[in-house]
Image (cartoon, rainbow, N blue to C red; front, side):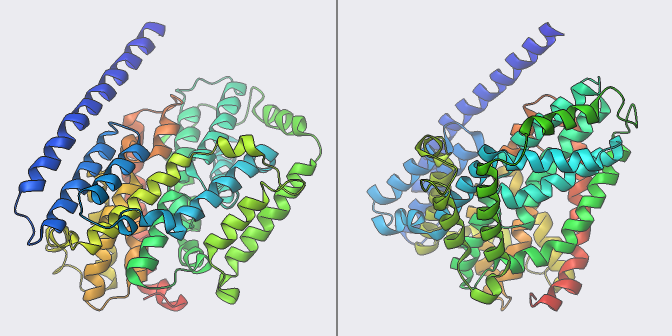
Length: 477
């Protein structure tokens, strides 16, 4: 088994190295080919598309760090004269990038204080008296933690550790049905819930693009209410689907599963001062986000305010060392993606992409029923070609909004459907969240493929009825 594991690791490393070389060689070729190809009437648009295509190739192949790729692309936009400095680096002055910083600070606060772990252990201990209930508990906890830890990667990291300990306590292997079922659903739902709530880089980025390109207000509360029925149905469907696909070897928690969870909860002891501070700050954030239809305070302001309060001496939980540990690369990558969208829009470079992707959709989108299906599955297929959902949204969402807005359709439902479709995935490379869960070794590509296909179809069916019947009732049509 050890030899097989080593060989598997070497194969993965070889595959990753090959993909990186493909990107490093292919990106300059794509840049040169499109730079001189007569695809646009103006050189600025032509060169903007060439640079954007190079960035997409590097992002898709993960040939280099996503943030570094973004910086290189923005520098080329500016230095080549394709756009002004203000346009090329506009993403850094966009509120979306700073909303993400606030989200990262809130996630770090919830994790460091121990409040996130306490909530996870408490709920799973009280609900999880069997595999069926434990599975449901992890799904519910995953959803609830979305408010506290607005990052799918962070939630998977927290919950995967608990899953691993629980499976070991049950005396089951990581390749058991129980182990695979728990780990894959914790991973996949983390990626889905990030689209039902404005939490995580993808939905935060999408909100910024919809507000900017569609010139509409995107309320946190309205987004949450719009997907609330979908959330409840998804929780139930995920629970039943995993029970069907991965029936347990043992239904009851023999071997100390509950004892493990209770022991971990006991180790946390009584609520600490840090947890109490964290609870107050989180209550403030969620309270303002859920009532933004009353006060209309920008969700970005709320998120960043609470995040900065978490760093304040004698008030918050975090310190300068925690600030240094944040994934600033994610913020820079988000800013670069927003900047790329702005440059493509300003230079009219999106026109060719619009014609290529929209031409076949035009005769199919005739109403709310058809639009929900066509938009969802088009985005699903488009996501195959981009290894990162943030890059997928930044390059395609402005195109979709531009076309359908010109057709007289409201940009908010169009943008929300397209963003939600980014949650449908069948390959690990399509999302960093899936990659993190996959790295624990509990499930393989085959598991992700079959679970992803079923859940993607289920989400499409839910959306098919949600858009025409429910959304108009809450003012989205």
